[in-house]
Length: 170
Image (cartoon, rainbow, N blue to C red; front, top):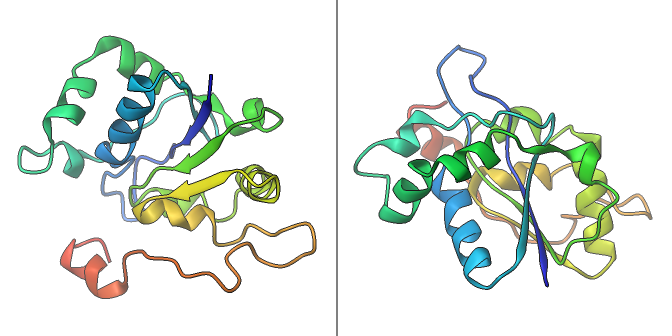
């Protein structure tokens, strides 16, 4: 059975106090597909425990059927709000590590040494490391064993300041 580690945020507020958190669909779609393929899925976050959901990702024009169904699932929400801590899973082996997005990841992903270690080890083991949207912030400071940054020489996509201002999050 293949193993997937889904890394999500624990942050629920911007420095300004505005609510934020996980962008729900950036977790539910890969979770759904992995479960359909009978993968063993682990949800982990920097501190473990509760995972706040960005209220913007729950708005009717944004919330699709897959995400809505998971949001309404007591079992899924229980699993999400009892996420493992990164320190609990850092020595486990996964076929794929995926960093889910949401603006909140900008607060607890970039400088998290355990996350960096997981990502670097995964990459140097020749296994899949992936990220979506703001989840790429977890790749920024990850260094390889030779001291170079994992992203050195690679192309990444993400939000720029203009897009952040359109989203009124700048």
